Image (tube, rainbow, N blue to C red; front, top):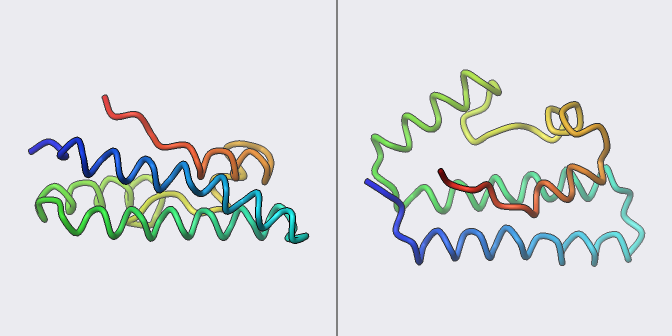
Length: 102
């Protein structure tokens, strides 16, 4: 069952809004690592909330895939992302960039 477009768009807007959160936190003097970790946690909370409206069977498949790939049902951790992208600033950018659905 595909994700309804309006719900997906809302999720994507919320993820993009994390860039503004990052800008504010950085302007307050937060270190990049702390901002990146905060954004990854915030995005994971958005995923959890968004998945509440999905078919539980689909969510179970998504979570099983994520657990097998990342060891966590929601998705990659901040540490896994910094290892993948190479810097905390790249993690900040990635956390505020919604994945494209294919």
